[in-house]
Image (tube, rainbow, N blue to C red; front, side, top):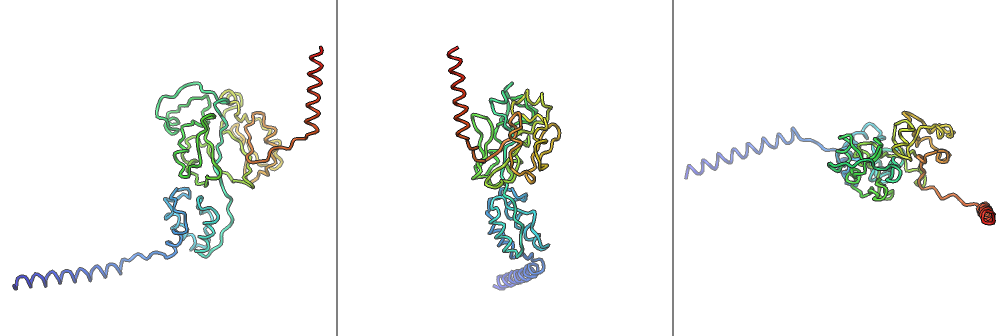
Length: 300
């Protein structure tokens, strides 16, 4: 009996001492979490897409709380939640934020199957990364889209698909959040995040081929040839030419579309602009002229 009592007393003493030690350690080494961290995390969408540049929404929340202590969270953004979520986060942190432009992914390759014919067949792992690493490709353009769909697999929002007729990826503007996952997935960097623009209107060069004009045209009939016509036409200094390739700065572009009209290869495209109005009188006159010409040829 004494043996059992002694064992109980010893074990009870050890448990009591251990409890005291654990209590002291928990107080001494306690890590205090900023209460704002939980609030910000709950305000974020929880997509964990990585488009913000951090490993998930919790990573962005930590960065936002830390940046708020310095008085500004400019440069930090949740592409999925957009301005609405960032405004809510700013209110929670008690700071003001500048309005940020909504961005959207654009595919800068216009080399459809018709304009960029296949010259060989690739027999290997069907992924853009593998094909690019092997310096392979089925067309003569070493810069254009490989068409294997790595961007499609990377998108968590079902916002990008491969068009079977053209062989090129197409972005669904209503679903795209501008997270940039497709941009990172493309080994040839043909996908770019650009300002969505007023009413979704954008003007950009849909080509990344840096070869000289003749070589680029041989590989793709819609390639930019670096002819400088767009550069000379732009009155706002929005177009630059480097390595035989034109680029339109979205921050300077006024959407006048004069560059679109002068591009000889139609490498410059405009999105979501209304169709040009047809002058009915001019169209009728031209139609009548064509009919008269045709009638004259028939008589002869």
